[in-house]
Length: 308
Image (cartoon, rainbow, N blue to C red; front, side, top):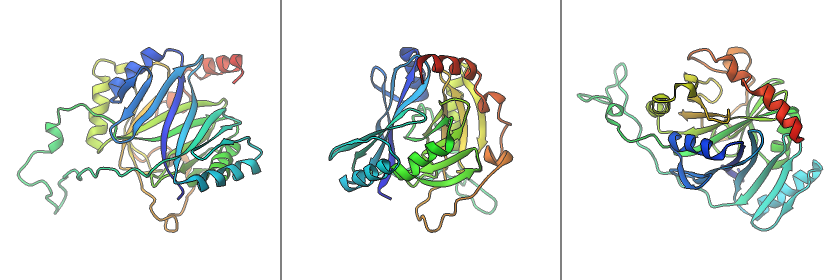
């Protein structure tokens, strides 16, 4: 795959300072006001002022200038204006109004994290010792940005921009509702879902294992129980463990671990999912606010007022 990772996101929020403090608590490293890094991905998150919360832009890494040329040709076939040079390409997704940038970047070499030792029937991987997670005292810090989920008023059109235009591949779908797409070996990096208005649903951040999913969430909730949205649970699509929290602007942020990896496209067969399995395999049922965020009506009014 010429595309090799979701490099960064730019998110607009009404109160940058207050929202920035949340993401410091979440475990991102503040590099400068409104700019954040993960452990392995470098700078991956930017907050900018906006009348309503929304995804302003994303950057996808590609291998070389030939990849930029192919993307430019594909987008022009879709009648999408393109700006590009030898290092980067920029285009605006016309429905959800998101600036998508493709940049030539070296492939990242990730540091392998040793597998957590879990005992099981007939398999004592951790004999004569307590679970190592019990002695973790360091704060949870996301290793890398995983994916972003956006609502769009024209799901098929936005999906076509990312697949036929940018070159993402479809991993799985919820028919007539959502498409899980990838620009790396992760099961999904961008998910577009049908919605009554264009909005940012959530960002997702990888941690080492399910213990760090739980530790991260518990730390976030210790003094701010109102941040809780949904979890702990496991998705069926993508297989990952999850816990969702809410930032002060109303965006959801997810700790996740154990995502499906698609290394050989010929082996993976995209499937369609409906009903409960489109949301999760086990865990508490999702609250109504996860499906339809509580601020959506106000968000719609504000977005329309601003012309978005």
